[in-house]
Amino acid sequence: MSTNPYAWLKKSLDTIKQADWYRSVQTIQSSPGAKVTVEGRSLINFASNDYLGLAGDDRLMQAAMAAIQEFGTGSTGSRLLTGHRELHRKLETAIAHWKQTEDALVFSSGYLANAGTIAAIVGKRDLILADINNHSSLKSGTTLSGATAIEYAHCNVEDLHQHLYQHRQAYRRCLIVTDSVFSMDGDLCPLPALLDLAAEFDCMLLVDEAHATGVLGTTGAGGVEHFGCTGRPLIQVGTLSKALGSLGGYVAGTKTLIDFLRNRAPTWIYTTALSPADTAAALAAVKVARQDPERRSQLWQNVNALKQLIAYQLPHRQFLPSNSPILCLPMETPAEALKVGQQLQTAGIFAPAIRPPTVTTSRIRFSVMATHKLAHIQQLVEALKTL
Ligand SMILES: *Cc1c(COP(=O)(O)O)cnc(C)c1O
Image (cartoon, rainbow, N blue to C red; front, side, top):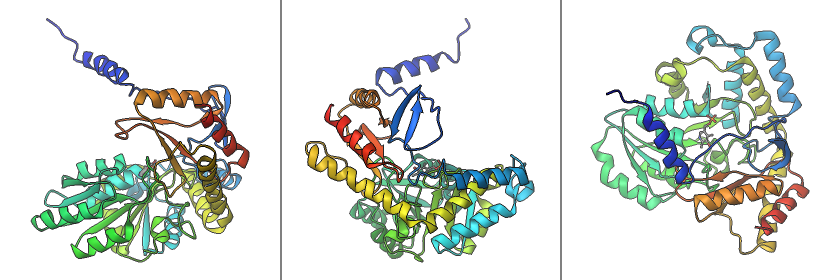
């Protein structure tokens, strides 16, 4: 009797559909921005990570095109073989200056930066303590590292302290891992308290600034700057693909850490270097993000405008606690999240329904951009009134 060893795939998909967890792609047919064309309709875009509106910025596009003309499209190899260009070094220097760290290293994505860094710095004899709401890439890094992992309650310093007290001694090295802005909630980690615990228990601390870079802090350097923790003993990871409007990831820290990662991070050593176009666009974006603070203040004005309009006009609608441009409306069930996402889309608003297994409770996630006009935000509030 012959059986089909792939038959389980269809069954598994059916189960996903029955739970309202099924996902599929929607095609964007325009350039990125505050308004996008989705499946033929123009919608106001509250679904993008392009917080500063740089992904469609002329300066980034010009830089990318110039880099293609000079260096071609592909980087042709890993950084240690044929992939390294002067542009990569320039970008790393610019990131290190911005973060005020000794050095930085650019990866081909934020996901790879997280996974490879964690895998490089801890192993089987070590302990990872991770916020339960951390991004998937941090969890992948944990698996890849082979270290023992314990999740602590979300942003709960007491719970973390308890775990450290109980378990730290039994392990060689310990790494505390956290998002700085939680990607699906929008709240911030208690960074100063985490740093204090790290010092007390002789732990390394890795903070993922994916949604904070370009967004938080006076110069946009991120959550570390926002909390006044610049210069403290930290490993900062982030992405070039969100507020910086390009593609790629980075790690910023001491010279020794970066040198170590160049020798030990598998996701840096064994993958092709970031393309010239992406590198040049990110370099241009770092300059804009640092030199154009008005873009950042416009972003925060928009965030506050949306929060205020909701508070005054829709007092029964409460966003989840947030200190970032990520604002989430909780939904009872995945089915409700899907329905509301669809209703908003009909009303001209593009915002995703976030469901398990990405999060434990469903929600609609709005991300505000610097390039939203007040009218866009008002239209969102009007659409929410009709729900
Ligand atoms: C998006 C994201 C990443 C991954 O970054 P990419 O550059 O998109 O791979 C890592 N961490 C967090 C918290 C993110 O939201």
